[in-house]
Structures are given as C-alpha cells and as structure tokens.
Length: 153
Image (cartoon, rainbow, N blue to C red; front, top):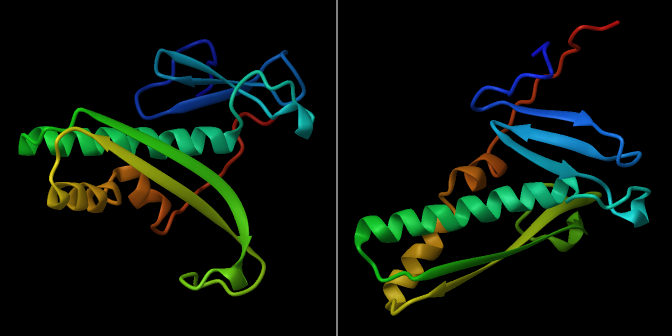
C-alpha cells in the first residue's frame, strides 16, 4: 500500500506512528481506527492497548463469536459469553506440555463464562468449540510471516 490516506482493503491492517507519544500508533482496519501504545511503565503514553492487548482481544472476540455462532446453530439457550484473557511468559521448564524445554515460552490463560440454562454436556461441548475459533487455530498452528521493505527512500 503506497497511499496511506486510503482505507486499507478488507483483510489488510495498516499501522502508522502518530504524534501522541514515542510508541503511539494508529491502527486502521477497514473503516475502523484504533490507538495502540505502550504503557507508561514501558516508556509510552498509554494512549491505547499494547500489542499483546490486541492479540488477546482478537482471541477473546473470536472465542466469544465462535461460541455464540455454534450455540445459535444448535438452538442452545446461550445468553451471554464472557472471555477473560491473560498473557505472560513462563519458564519452559515449568511447562510440562511444551515442546520447548529451555528459556521462556508465552502462555495465554483464558477463562470462559457461559450464561444461560445450558446442560453440562452443552457446556463441555462449547469448551471444546472454543479451541476451534479461527484465531485460536492460527495461534496454535505453524505461522509463516514474510517481511519486506516498501518504498525505501
């Protein structure tokens, strides 16, 4: 994308620095404009969520949407979904399920609350479905990121 004034097309996110602080960014996704920044403790001005905040938001939103969609298709009485997420880094030696055994690994903890008169089997199935949301699948699969310079001056 060479013309930064135009809206990014669907499926493309544009991130540009802004003047709100040393790490402040403007994130454009379609017609949506969102702030991103680092907290003051990390040298930013806290004008928006940090990158991990957006990563967790993506996983949480996808989880909730996937659960509501599934319950709606099944005509289950799911009334509300609440997803709470936390990211941190843990020592690989403290992670029995991790392939990595040295250094630190990223850990995302996710708590899901389901409101509505659901049976135990329905709740169990919805918990399984949570791991099938597209963002969860992306985060737990092999990811290839290609990087290139555009319009180098």
